[in-house]
Length: 178
Image (cartoon, rainbow, N blue to C red; front, top):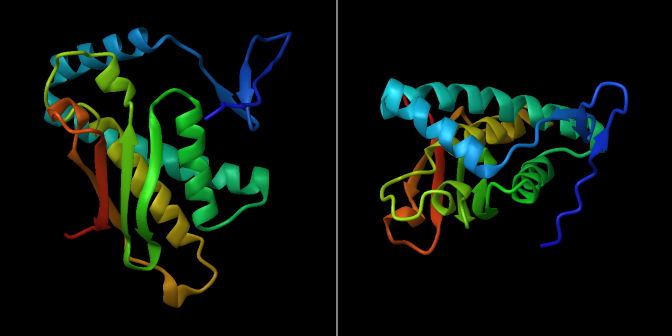
């Protein structure tokens, strides 16, 4: 994949934008070191819950902005989201299967930035992404033109991580249960 991200830098403010959204550009080790420090300070479960909620909201917001920016809708927005994540160095994301009307999806992640930045560390290291996929799929459903095809609210979790010895990470999105 040849990343062709449009990056604009405002000469007066130094603010970077891509697709009209302000961006930050930081080295992978900087982000991962901060991520693991917060995880250690708060505990993994607490931190994962915070990241899930924040990631869900951010993905939903991003999908809404990108749909308007590019004149796209439905699963095209979800696919665009994964393309942009892949182009930004998080890893290579691919939809293995998706059915928005039933709130089901399976996303594969190859070359996760969290796995690459923590060689030798084992476990599910990529949980930060989970809320992103539920937020994006819920945006698809919430904006569906046919209410009869709208799926219920969704939940996402990492079910397989490359840091557990697998070839790649896998996330499953399914209907949210109370």
